[in-house]
Length: 245
Image (tube, rainbow, N blue to C red):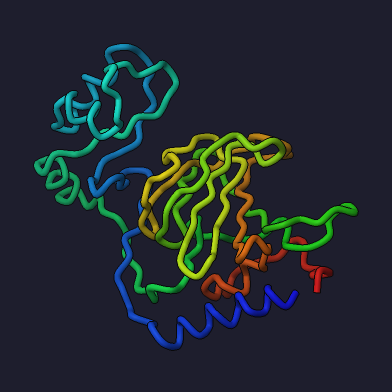
């Protein structure tokens, strides 16, 4: 518990000292970012899909293979591939009003990993006699999950009961976890920006329905994400008892 308190003090101190405001763009279903390029994660449904979609987005197939680090030039059926947009395609999207939303946030502040969260189905604490190490956010399958803060991906694997899981390491020994994903878009070693999509909501692992299991840890101690995320006045806690303190 002492280390837990120290983690909170570190974050509050950094917010008070740094606190630099920044504009953050939030990825959505139409526009996403990867390795500094705007584009879209697209599932490959057949051998010819990549070339067809690349052409639709104004991009050469070679660019797609390069950004996905696929020198074998083979994309398996059912896998997601990042296809970058050409400048002309971005201009077409902008003309149609298709853009990413932007928010102002502190460079040391976490943001919600899912937009428009209405309720939390389970909070940090004892649940069914076992310790639940994060909070569960119900959401539609396939909804984008974004990085809550910029950082480096240290884990992107199938993790037993957590299912498809991504761990991102941040400053001041903080780590965020995103679990039960139906798809993961980043790999170990990738650097991600705040608001960048890293995967899609799902129900993999031990799960009773589509939702995101989200954790904030410091020095491997699970903390209550609601103590760190921006206020959400319309939020409903379906499981409100905090019995871990």
